[in-house]
Amino acid sequence: MNSPDNTPTSEQIAIFQALDEIDKDPCIGRLTKEEKDFFFDHFFSNEAKMERLQRIRQRKQALEQQLAKVAAMEKQLLENLQE
Image 1: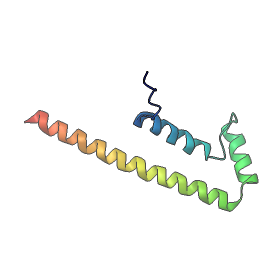
Image 2: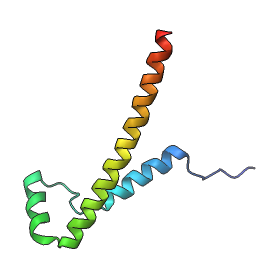
Image 3: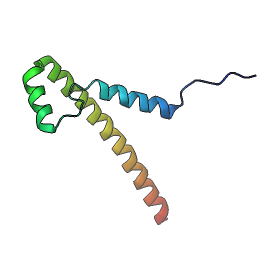
């Protein structure tokens, strides 16, 4: 009898990475935006705020790179269709 392969797929790894990133956010929970803003402003240190800002900037950069790739793919497809 073969043992099952428990190696995660690339899709599962991507999901786990996204969940890990969400868990790093100090403002996760069932609070309203106003409550999150209040608690974040009053209870988190400037270092925590800077770390969150850095994570947001990294995420933004990754999304911009992904958008550039998708835009290039779109451009290439449009050029191929017009030929």
